[in-house]
Length: 356
Ligand code: ACO
Image (cartoon, rainbow, N blue to C red):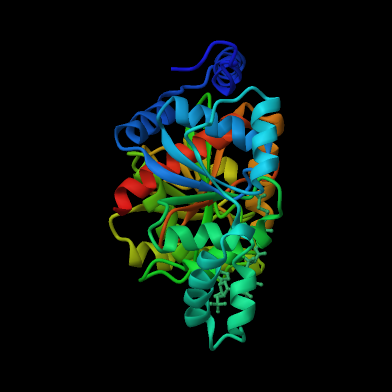
Protein backbone atom coordinates (compact mmCIF):
# COMPACT_ATOMS: atom_id res chain seq x y z
CA UNK A 1 0.00 0.00 0.00
CA UNK A 2 1.11 3.54 -0.61
CA UNK A 3 2.33 5.64 2.28
CA UNK A 4 0.26 8.65 3.16
CA UNK A 5 1.65 11.85 1.68
CA UNK A 6 2.57 10.01 -1.50
CA UNK A 7 0.51 11.38 -4.36
CA UNK A 8 -1.83 8.98 -6.15
CA UNK A 9 -0.09 9.73 -9.35
CA UNK A 10 -0.39 9.06 -13.00
CA UNK A 11 -3.54 6.96 -12.87
CA UNK A 12 -5.47 10.09 -11.93
CA UNK A 13 -4.42 11.89 -15.12
CA UNK A 14 -5.22 8.76 -17.00
CA UNK A 15 -8.75 8.36 -15.65
CA UNK A 16 -9.46 12.02 -16.30
CA UNK A 17 -8.18 11.67 -19.82
CA UNK A 18 -10.32 8.60 -20.39
CA UNK A 19 -13.41 10.46 -19.23
CA UNK A 20 -12.54 13.38 -21.42
CA UNK A 21 -12.13 11.07 -24.41
CA UNK A 22 -15.43 9.40 -23.76
CA UNK A 23 -17.20 12.74 -23.61
CA UNK A 24 -15.39 14.28 -26.54
CA UNK A 25 -15.34 11.35 -28.93
CA UNK A 26 -17.61 8.71 -27.45
CA UNK A 27 -14.86 6.18 -28.04
CA UNK A 28 -15.27 2.60 -27.04
CA UNK A 29 -12.61 1.80 -24.46
CA UNK A 30 -13.09 -1.95 -24.59
CA UNK A 31 -10.18 -2.68 -26.88
CA UNK A 32 -7.50 -1.33 -24.53
CA UNK A 33 -9.35 -2.44 -21.37
CA UNK A 34 -9.20 -5.99 -22.69
CA UNK A 35 -5.47 -5.72 -23.36
CA UNK A 36 -4.84 -4.25 -19.90
CA UNK A 37 -6.76 -7.04 -18.16
CA UNK A 38 -4.86 -9.63 -20.17
CA UNK A 39 -1.57 -7.99 -19.16
CA UNK A 40 -2.54 -8.03 -15.47
CA UNK A 41 -3.11 -11.79 -15.55
CA UNK A 42 0.61 -12.40 -16.06
CA UNK A 43 2.65 -9.18 -15.71
CA UNK A 44 6.05 -9.25 -17.41
CA UNK A 45 9.33 -7.41 -16.86
CA UNK A 46 9.39 -4.30 -19.03
CA UNK A 47 12.63 -2.36 -19.32
CA UNK A 48 12.44 1.40 -19.95
CA UNK A 49 15.49 2.77 -21.74
CA UNK A 50 14.60 6.36 -20.87
CA UNK A 51 13.82 6.21 -17.17
CA UNK A 52 15.44 9.59 -16.44
CA UNK A 53 12.22 11.14 -17.67
CA UNK A 54 9.28 12.15 -15.54
CA UNK A 55 6.63 10.84 -17.95
CA UNK A 56 8.30 7.44 -18.02
CA UNK A 57 8.49 7.40 -14.23
CA UNK A 58 4.82 8.34 -13.90
CA UNK A 59 3.90 5.62 -16.38
CA UNK A 60 6.09 3.19 -14.41
CA UNK A 61 4.20 4.19 -11.26
CA UNK A 62 0.87 3.40 -12.89
CA UNK A 63 1.97 0.07 -14.29
CA UNK A 64 3.51 -0.91 -10.95
CA UNK A 65 0.45 0.15 -8.93
CA UNK A 66 -1.97 -1.46 -11.35
CA UNK A 67 0.26 -4.55 -11.69
CA UNK A 68 0.26 -4.29 -15.48
CA UNK A 69 4.00 -5.01 -15.63
CA UNK A 70 7.16 -5.10 -13.54
CA UNK A 71 9.14 -2.03 -14.56
CA UNK A 72 12.94 -1.94 -14.84
CA UNK A 73 14.43 1.54 -15.09
CA UNK A 74 17.60 2.32 -17.05
CA UNK A 75 19.43 5.57 -16.43
CA UNK A 76 21.48 7.64 -14.01
CA UNK A 77 20.41 6.51 -10.55
CA UNK A 78 20.81 9.90 -8.86
CA UNK A 79 18.81 11.66 -11.52
CA UNK A 80 16.06 9.04 -11.44
CA UNK A 81 15.88 9.13 -7.64
CA UNK A 82 15.66 12.90 -7.52
CA UNK A 83 12.86 12.87 -10.12
CA UNK A 84 11.06 10.23 -8.05
CA UNK A 85 11.37 12.42 -4.99
CA UNK A 86 10.40 15.69 -6.69
CA UNK A 87 7.28 14.08 -8.09
CA UNK A 88 6.38 12.24 -4.88
CA UNK A 89 6.42 8.89 -6.62
CA UNK A 90 6.79 5.58 -4.85
CA UNK A 91 9.07 3.28 -6.82
CA UNK A 92 11.17 2.00 -3.90
CA UNK A 93 10.80 -1.63 -5.01
CA UNK A 94 11.64 -1.00 -8.66
CA UNK A 95 15.02 -2.03 -10.08
CA UNK A 96 17.14 0.88 -11.37
CA UNK A 97 20.17 0.08 -13.53
CA UNK A 98 22.82 2.65 -14.44
CA UNK A 99 24.39 1.15 -17.55
CA UNK A 100 27.61 3.12 -17.01
CA UNK A 101 28.16 1.39 -13.67
CA UNK A 102 27.86 -2.18 -14.89
CA UNK A 103 31.36 -3.11 -16.12
CA UNK A 104 30.72 -6.86 -16.00
CA UNK A 105 27.42 -6.66 -17.85
CA UNK A 106 28.91 -4.28 -20.41
CA UNK A 107 31.65 -6.81 -21.08
CA UNK A 108 29.25 -9.75 -21.30
CA UNK A 109 26.70 -7.91 -23.45
CA UNK A 110 29.50 -6.47 -25.60
CA UNK A 111 30.79 -9.99 -26.28
CA UNK A 112 27.34 -11.10 -27.39
CA UNK A 113 26.95 -8.06 -29.66
CA UNK A 114 30.42 -8.62 -31.10
CA UNK A 115 29.58 -12.23 -31.95
CA UNK A 116 26.41 -11.13 -33.67
CA UNK A 117 28.05 -8.31 -35.65
CA UNK A 118 31.69 -9.32 -36.08
CA UNK A 119 31.30 -9.50 -39.82
CA UNK A 120 29.44 -6.20 -39.96
CA UNK A 121 32.38 -3.93 -39.19
CA UNK A 122 32.43 -3.81 -35.39
CA UNK A 123 35.38 -4.31 -33.00
CA UNK A 124 35.09 -5.95 -29.55
CA UNK A 125 35.96 -2.66 -27.85
CA UNK A 126 33.36 -0.76 -29.81
CA UNK A 127 30.73 -3.41 -29.01
CA UNK A 128 31.39 -3.03 -25.27
CA UNK A 129 31.31 0.75 -25.51
CA UNK A 130 28.01 0.68 -27.48
CA UNK A 131 26.42 -1.29 -24.66
CA UNK A 132 26.46 1.76 -22.38
CA UNK A 133 23.80 3.16 -24.70
CA UNK A 134 20.54 2.27 -22.98
CA UNK A 135 18.84 1.31 -26.24
CA UNK A 136 21.54 -1.32 -26.78
CA UNK A 137 21.59 -2.36 -23.12
CA UNK A 138 17.81 -2.67 -22.90
CA UNK A 139 17.60 -4.61 -26.17
CA UNK A 140 20.31 -6.98 -24.93
CA UNK A 141 18.45 -7.56 -21.65
CA UNK A 142 15.44 -8.66 -23.69
CA UNK A 143 17.58 -10.70 -26.08
CA UNK A 144 19.17 -12.58 -23.15
CA UNK A 145 15.91 -13.04 -21.25
CA UNK A 146 16.79 -10.63 -18.42
CA UNK A 147 13.71 -8.60 -19.31
CA UNK A 148 10.64 -9.52 -21.33
CA UNK A 149 10.06 -6.35 -23.35
CA UNK A 150 11.73 -3.03 -24.17
CA UNK A 151 10.01 0.35 -24.29
CA UNK A 152 11.93 3.34 -25.64
CA UNK A 153 11.68 6.26 -28.05
CA UNK A 154 10.00 8.96 -25.98
CA UNK A 155 12.96 11.34 -26.19
CA UNK A 156 14.98 10.32 -29.25
CA UNK A 157 14.11 10.07 -32.90
CA UNK A 158 12.71 6.82 -34.20
CA UNK A 159 15.59 5.69 -36.47
CA UNK A 160 18.17 6.08 -33.66
CA UNK A 161 15.97 4.16 -31.26
CA UNK A 162 15.02 1.25 -33.49
CA UNK A 163 18.48 0.50 -34.94
CA UNK A 164 19.96 -1.02 -31.73
CA UNK A 165 16.97 -3.36 -31.47
CA UNK A 166 17.24 -4.34 -35.13
CA UNK A 167 20.91 -5.18 -34.54
CA UNK A 168 20.58 -6.90 -31.16
CA UNK A 169 17.20 -8.66 -31.43
CA UNK A 170 16.44 -8.64 -35.16
CA UNK A 171 13.40 -9.84 -37.05
CA UNK A 172 11.32 -12.95 -36.46
CA UNK A 173 12.46 -15.98 -38.44
CA UNK A 174 10.35 -16.23 -41.57
CA UNK A 175 10.04 -12.45 -41.83
CA UNK A 176 12.56 -10.01 -43.22
CA UNK A 177 10.77 -6.80 -42.37
CA UNK A 178 9.51 -5.03 -39.37
CA UNK A 179 6.72 -2.48 -39.66
CA UNK A 180 4.80 -0.11 -37.40
CA UNK A 181 1.05 -0.25 -36.88
CA UNK A 182 -1.25 2.29 -35.26
CA UNK A 183 -4.65 1.52 -33.82
CA UNK A 184 -6.89 4.46 -34.53
CA UNK A 185 -9.65 4.25 -31.97
CA UNK A 186 -12.55 6.22 -33.49
CA UNK A 187 -16.26 6.70 -32.87
CA UNK A 188 -16.76 4.32 -35.81
CA UNK A 189 -14.69 1.62 -34.13
CA UNK A 190 -11.01 0.74 -34.31
CA UNK A 191 -9.03 1.02 -37.54
CA UNK A 192 -5.53 -0.33 -38.00
CA UNK A 193 -3.01 1.69 -40.05
CA UNK A 194 0.33 0.43 -41.42
CA UNK A 195 3.12 1.00 -42.13
CA UNK A 196 3.18 4.25 -40.21
CA UNK A 197 6.71 4.22 -38.81
CA UNK A 198 9.44 2.13 -40.47
CA UNK A 199 9.62 1.38 -44.21
CA UNK A 200 10.24 4.50 -46.24
CA UNK A 201 9.19 3.33 -49.69
CA UNK A 202 8.34 -0.38 -49.69
CA UNK A 203 8.25 -2.34 -52.95
CA UNK A 204 5.16 -4.37 -53.91
CA UNK A 205 6.77 -7.47 -52.38
CA UNK A 206 7.60 -5.56 -49.20
CA UNK A 207 4.02 -4.30 -49.02
CA UNK A 208 2.90 -7.94 -49.09
CA UNK A 209 5.12 -8.58 -46.05
CA UNK A 210 3.65 -5.53 -44.35
CA UNK A 211 0.12 -6.80 -45.09
CA UNK A 212 0.95 -10.19 -43.51
CA UNK A 213 2.53 -8.60 -40.42
CA UNK A 214 -0.35 -6.17 -40.01
CA UNK A 215 -3.03 -8.85 -40.39
CA UNK A 216 -1.36 -10.79 -37.57
CA UNK A 217 -1.14 -7.59 -35.54
CA UNK A 218 -4.90 -7.04 -35.91
CA UNK A 219 -5.64 -10.66 -34.90
CA UNK A 220 -3.56 -10.02 -31.76
CA UNK A 221 -6.44 -7.73 -30.68
CA UNK A 222 -8.99 -10.50 -31.40
CA UNK A 223 -10.32 -8.64 -34.41
CA UNK A 224 -10.67 -10.08 -37.92
CA UNK A 225 -8.53 -8.04 -40.31
CA UNK A 226 -10.23 -6.76 -43.46
CA UNK A 227 -7.54 -5.17 -45.52
CA UNK A 228 -7.73 -2.27 -47.97
CA UNK A 229 -4.56 -1.46 -49.90
CA UNK A 230 -4.72 2.31 -50.37
CA UNK A 231 -3.67 4.45 -53.29
CA UNK A 232 -4.82 7.51 -55.25
CA UNK A 233 -6.15 5.03 -57.84
CA UNK A 234 -9.23 2.77 -57.86
CA UNK A 235 -8.69 -0.61 -59.53
CA UNK A 236 -6.57 0.68 -62.38
CA UNK A 237 -8.27 4.07 -62.77
CA UNK A 238 -5.04 6.06 -62.57
CA UNK A 239 -1.48 5.63 -63.75
CA UNK A 240 1.80 5.98 -61.94
CA UNK A 241 4.29 4.07 -59.88
CA UNK A 242 2.25 4.02 -56.67
CA UNK A 243 -0.88 2.86 -58.46
CA UNK A 244 0.86 -0.07 -60.13
CA UNK A 245 2.83 -0.93 -56.99
CA UNK A 246 -0.29 -1.11 -54.83
CA UNK A 247 -2.20 -3.05 -57.53
CA UNK A 248 0.63 -5.57 -57.72
CA UNK A 249 0.88 -5.82 -53.92
CA UNK A 250 -2.88 -6.51 -53.72
CA UNK A 251 -2.70 -9.28 -56.32
CA UNK A 252 0.34 -10.89 -54.66
CA UNK A 253 -1.17 -10.62 -51.19
CA UNK A 254 -4.43 -12.25 -52.33
CA UNK A 255 -2.36 -15.19 -53.60
CA UNK A 256 -0.17 -15.41 -50.53
CA UNK A 257 -2.98 -15.04 -47.97
CA UNK A 258 -6.05 -16.68 -49.55
CA UNK A 259 -7.90 -16.72 -46.21
CA UNK A 260 -7.65 -12.98 -45.67
CA UNK A 261 -10.10 -10.40 -46.94
CA UNK A 262 -7.89 -8.09 -49.04
CA UNK A 263 -8.96 -5.50 -51.57
CA UNK A 264 -7.28 -2.75 -53.58
CA UNK A 265 -5.80 -0.74 -54.95
CA UNK A 266 -8.33 1.82 -53.84
CA UNK A 267 -8.77 5.35 -52.55
CA UNK A 268 -9.40 5.80 -48.82
CA UNK A 269 -12.97 7.06 -49.19
CA UNK A 270 -13.86 4.12 -51.44
CA UNK A 271 -12.31 1.68 -48.96
CA UNK A 272 -14.42 3.12 -46.16
CA UNK A 273 -17.66 3.68 -48.07
CA UNK A 274 -19.62 0.63 -49.05
CA UNK A 275 -22.19 2.57 -51.09
CA UNK A 276 -19.52 3.80 -53.49
CA UNK A 277 -18.23 0.25 -53.79
CA UNK A 278 -21.66 -1.22 -54.50
CA UNK A 279 -22.36 1.36 -57.16
CA UNK A 280 -19.02 1.35 -58.97
CA UNK A 281 -17.04 -1.68 -57.86
CA UNK A 282 -19.60 -4.41 -57.18
CA UNK A 283 -16.80 -7.04 -57.28
CA UNK A 284 -15.08 -5.56 -54.23
CA UNK A 285 -14.26 -8.16 -51.58
CA UNK A 286 -14.93 -5.52 -48.93
CA UNK A 287 -18.66 -5.20 -49.62
CA UNK A 288 -20.41 -6.40 -46.49
CA UNK A 289 -17.02 -6.66 -44.74
CA UNK A 290 -16.24 -3.22 -43.40
CA UNK A 291 -12.56 -2.47 -44.05
CA UNK A 292 -10.68 -2.01 -40.76
CA UNK A 293 -7.04 -2.41 -41.84
CA UNK A 294 -5.57 0.26 -44.06
CA UNK A 295 -2.26 -0.38 -45.81
CA UNK A 296 -0.48 2.73 -47.06
CA UNK A 297 1.77 2.84 -50.13
CA UNK A 298 4.67 4.46 -48.31
CA UNK A 299 5.80 5.96 -45.02
CA UNK A 300 4.83 9.52 -45.98
CA UNK A 301 1.19 8.69 -46.55
CA UNK A 302 0.87 6.35 -43.55
CA UNK A 303 2.61 8.64 -41.09
CA UNK A 304 0.80 11.77 -42.27
CA UNK A 305 -2.60 10.05 -42.29
CA UNK A 306 -2.44 8.85 -38.69
CA UNK A 307 -1.08 12.13 -37.37
CA UNK A 308 -3.77 14.16 -39.16
CA UNK A 309 -6.47 11.87 -37.85
CA UNK A 310 -5.19 12.06 -34.29
CA UNK A 311 -4.76 15.85 -34.31
CA UNK A 312 -7.89 17.00 -36.16
CA UNK A 313 -10.06 13.91 -36.50
CA UNK A 314 -12.06 12.26 -33.77
CA UNK A 315 -9.56 9.55 -32.96
CA UNK A 316 -7.22 8.34 -30.30
CA UNK A 317 -3.98 6.88 -31.68
CA UNK A 318 -2.62 3.81 -29.90
CA UNK A 319 0.86 2.76 -30.92
CA UNK A 320 3.06 2.48 -32.75
CA UNK A 321 2.93 -1.28 -32.31
CA UNK A 322 6.16 -2.63 -33.75
CA UNK A 323 5.46 -5.77 -35.80
CA UNK A 324 7.92 -8.44 -36.87
CA UNK A 325 10.58 -8.15 -34.14
CA UNK A 326 11.85 -11.44 -32.76
CA UNK A 327 11.19 -10.28 -29.16
CA UNK A 328 8.84 -7.60 -27.84
CA UNK A 329 10.19 -4.09 -28.48
CA UNK A 330 8.03 -1.04 -28.89
CA UNK A 331 9.30 2.38 -29.88
CA UNK A 332 7.15 5.21 -28.60
CA UNK A 333 6.22 8.22 -30.61
CA UNK A 334 8.36 11.20 -29.60
CA UNK A 335 6.59 12.99 -26.76
CA UNK A 336 3.92 10.34 -26.06
CA UNK A 337 1.56 11.00 -23.15
CA UNK A 338 1.60 8.94 -19.94
CA UNK A 339 -1.56 7.19 -21.06
CA UNK A 340 0.00 6.32 -24.42
CA UNK A 341 3.03 4.89 -22.64
CA UNK A 342 0.86 2.78 -20.31
CA UNK A 343 -1.11 1.49 -23.32
CA UNK A 344 2.09 0.49 -25.09
CA UNK A 345 3.38 -1.26 -21.97
CA UNK A 346 0.17 -3.29 -21.74
CA UNK A 347 0.52 -4.25 -25.41
CA UNK A 348 4.18 -5.18 -24.83
CA UNK A 349 3.23 -7.39 -21.87
CA UNK A 350 0.58 -9.29 -23.84
CA UNK A 351 3.08 -9.54 -26.70
CA UNK A 352 5.60 -11.03 -24.24
CA UNK A 353 2.99 -13.43 -22.82
CA UNK A 354 2.40 -14.91 -26.24
CA UNK A 355 6.15 -15.07 -26.90
CA UNK A 356 6.85 -17.12 -23.77
N1 ACO B 1 12.83 -4.37 -41.28
C1 ACO B 1 13.75 -5.18 -40.75
N2 ACO B 1 15.05 -4.91 -40.70
C2 ACO B 1 15.46 -3.74 -41.21
C3 ACO B 1 14.55 -2.84 -41.79
C4 ACO B 1 13.19 -3.19 -41.81
N3 ACO B 1 12.25 -2.40 -42.32
N4 ACO B 1 15.26 -1.76 -42.23
C5 ACO B 1 16.54 -2.01 -41.91
N5 ACO B 1 16.66 -3.19 -41.31
C6 ACO B 1 17.88 -3.82 -40.81
C7 ACO B 1 18.87 -4.01 -41.91
O1 ACO B 1 18.68 -5.26 -42.51
C8 ACO B 1 20.19 -3.92 -41.19
O2 ACO B 1 20.52 -5.13 -40.59
P1 ACO B 1 22.05 -5.56 -40.52
O3 ACO B 1 22.81 -4.38 -40.00
O4 ACO B 1 22.03 -6.71 -39.60
O5 ACO B 1 22.45 -5.91 -41.92
C9 ACO B 1 19.91 -2.95 -40.05
O6 ACO B 1 18.49 -2.93 -39.90
C10 ACO B 1 20.41 -1.58 -40.35
O7 ACO B 1 20.13 -1.31 -41.69
P2 ACO B 1 20.61 0.01 -42.42
O8 ACO B 1 20.42 -0.20 -43.88
O9 ACO B 1 21.91 0.46 -41.89
O10 ACO B 1 19.57 0.98 -41.83
P3 ACO B 1 18.60 1.87 -42.60
O11 ACO B 1 19.37 3.04 -43.04
O12 ACO B 1 17.79 1.09 -43.56
O13 ACO B 1 17.71 2.29 -41.37
C11 ACO B 1 15.62 2.47 -40.36
C12 ACO B 1 16.66 1.51 -40.91
C13 ACO B 1 16.24 3.29 -39.25
C14 ACO B 1 14.45 1.70 -39.81
C15 ACO B 1 15.20 3.39 -41.54
O14 ACO B 1 14.50 2.63 -42.47
C16 ACO B 1 14.38 4.56 -41.13
O15 ACO B 1 14.92 5.60 -40.76
N6 ACO B 1 13.04 4.46 -41.25
C17 ACO B 1 12.15 5.56 -40.95
C18 ACO B 1 11.96 5.75 -39.46
C19 ACO B 1 11.29 7.05 -39.23
O16 ACO B 1 11.91 8.10 -39.23
N7 ACO B 1 9.95 7.01 -39.04
C20 ACO B 1 9.12 8.16 -38.97
C21 ACO B 1 8.88 8.63 -37.60
S1 ACO B 1 8.18 7.43 -36.56
C22 ACO B 1 6.83 8.18 -35.74
O17 ACO B 1 6.32 9.13 -36.22
C23 ACO B 1 6.34 7.57 -34.48
